[in-house]
Length: 186
Image (cartoon, rainbow, N blue to C red; front, side, top):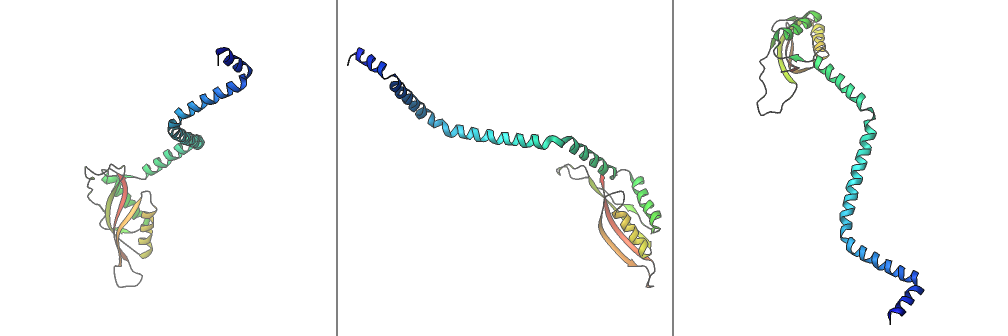
């Protein structure tokens, strides 16, 4: 076949020859790019996950300012209920207010010694401060003291409690020995 015959054939069958050339080109491209397909799928999957995460964050962020304000208010309310370790007089004043509110007689109110956490322990904003007391009063007064401790202005956890009658007389005065912790800041 001569060059003129080849050119004549190509001019007669332009569409067929073009389709065959394009098919061969696509075949070569697919053959050489086939190795990159798994990597491209991984990239697509990771970007899809990132996009879904961003869409979820955008959807959830519409009331973020209100949630932040609520958390700040809750943190302020918690901080207002904390006692301070070094303010012994104010801490004891709380116990004396309980005594006057409940009409009990506190005979041995004391703040227990506080030891700071060890140096290697994780840092916390709050610490438990121990207290001990012995109260005397009738049954209702002693229960009122416990209720006021439980629902009082500070967060309280009772460690030990010993309630016994002071005398054998029924309905007589009760003696309460109590050890508890109030949540505070160092």
